[in-house]
Image (cartoon, rainbow, N blue to C red; front, top):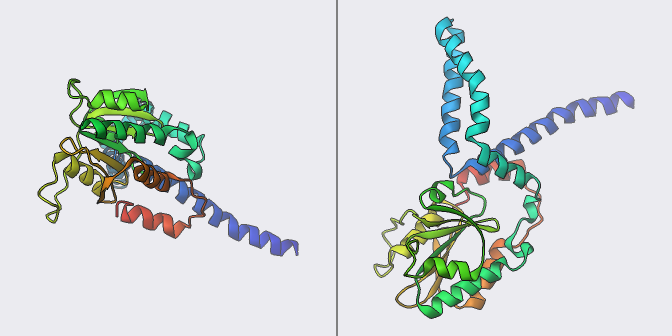
Length: 270
């Protein structure tokens, strides 16, 4: 009996280790998607391949240089990626399965309230709410801020007399992290010619990421929401809140390794 249990443990240990390593790698890949970190990681992989080839072909000089670079690179890594590491550690302290705007209380209400105020005043606006795929590239295209989400602040940012009313704001977790950010315009040929730049930018971002975007038309005051490259228009505040509640509600589920791999390869944008 003891030998049977021992053999079972010896079988499950490597499976458990592979599952843990795969999950960690999956979370890292999801975390760095949509950021410039991807390019840096690709560069590091290329350097490691060059180092392996230099050792294989016994290129002593190149191997010596790369060894010194890697020694310095460890310190450089922590300096360059200090913001990302801080953000990652903060997320580890949270339960990702239950991370939601609804749970924080009042955040969705502030967004909906801002949209209602902007709509009534016919003030154009573009709001992007980050989900799993990072929006760091788009954050860096605007003016970096770090402010608590409030309806009054959102309305102030998009008021015509302010210098940052053009572009969009990005909400990450519970904070407005940037304003005046530029989003990619949708190139979908089937879109109506009546859609303006804000609406095309809202669609373009949701075509490339899993973000949720909200647009308020300057001409009509109509509220629209875009997700997964699809746009729903003519929303009233109650409908907007209901859709946001459904998109950000906590879901308790067990995700298999196959589903995680499928979700990453497909990209969660479709």
